[in-house]
Amino acid sequence: MVQWIEALSTDTEAMNRLAQNYQIHPLALEDCLHRDQRAKLEDYESHQLLVWFLYTEKKIFELQFLIYPYTLILVSHDPPPKEKTWKEYLRLSEGSKDVLHFLYQVLDRITDVTAIEIRSLFARIQDFEQNLFKGETEIRSILPTKKRLASAEMQMGHLPSVTLQLQNFFRPTDNLKWKFRDLHDHTERLYQSIVFHQGQIAGAFELYWAVVAQKTNLQVKKLTALAAIAVPISVWASFWGMNFQAIPFESPTFFAFAMTVMFGSVIALFFILKSKGYFSR
Image (cartoon, rainbow, N blue to C red; front, side, top):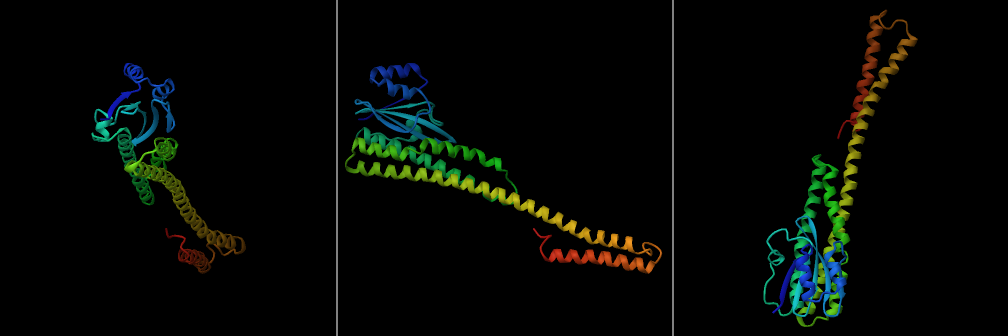
C-alpha cells in the first residue's frame, strides 16, 4: 500500500518532522522550502526529488514530490484552490500497485488539469479577436493572458525533458512503461500548446494594430477628400477675384455663371471621389 503525505512548505513544524522521520537530504529540503525552482528530477540515493508544476484557476502552483520506495510526499507552497487536500482536488484514487504507478496517476491528473486551463486561454484569445472587429475591446484586456502564458512557458517548458528523465532513471516496465511514454507525449503537447497560444497573441497584437491603422487611414482618407473638395472653390475664387472686375456684383449674369462653375466643380469632384471609394468604409 502506497503512503501519501501532504505538507505545506510554510508549516515549519510539519517540515521539520518530515525531515527527521524520512531523513530528507538537506539540499532536497532546501528546494522544498523555497519557491521558484525549475522543473527537475534529482536523486539522493534513498529518495528522489521531483519538481512539477500545475496551472489551474489562473495560477501556477509549484509542487515538490519526495519519492520513497513506499511513500510519496507532496510539499506545496500553497494549499489547493479548492477542497481541503491536494488528493481531493486531484481526485486521486487508492489502491495503486506501487509508488511509481501512484506517481504516474498524480502527474497525469496534474497534466490533464493544466491542459484544460490552457484551452480556456485559447477561448479568451478567440473572444479578443472577435471583439476586436466589433470595436468592443482594448489591447490591455489581453495582457493578463499574455503574462500567464509567459509564466507557463518559463516554468513548464522543461516538463517534457523531466518525463524523459523519469523514464531513464526508474526504467518502468510492463504497462507503466507506456504510461510514462504517454505522459511525455501529453507534456510535449502541453508545451506546444503554450507556444502556439503565445504566437496567437502575437498575431492578435498585429491584428489590433492593423485595425487601428485601418481606422486611422479611413479618417485621413475622409479628411483628404474634404480638403480636396475645398480646392476648386479656392482656385476659382482666386481666379475670378484677381482677373475680373465684374465679380462679385457688377454683372449678375457673370456672377451666376461664376457660382455655377465653382459649385459645379465641387459637385463633380465629390462624385468622382465617391466613385473611387473615398467615402466608403
